[in-house]
Length: 96
Image (cartoon, rainbow, N blue to C red; front, side):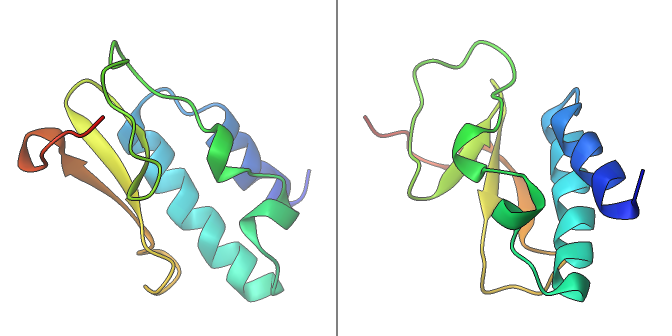
């Protein structure tokens, strides 16, 4: 299994939002080095899992996935390894 495949596997098997964030940041570094996108690596940001009971929240323009207490933010303008960040959910007004 290649390094890229191992990193994609870590994303696919993440058990928490923080683990998913860490795996996505590691994968973004490898993708940058190989000059490919996350999608080309096999990760579709539109289909990442959510963690916990959090059906009341959905804001795909700003947050790509969430848990009951945290949000996973993606900013493509940042450097690889820093594109994904877990933020406290309480810091953001939830919108329908």
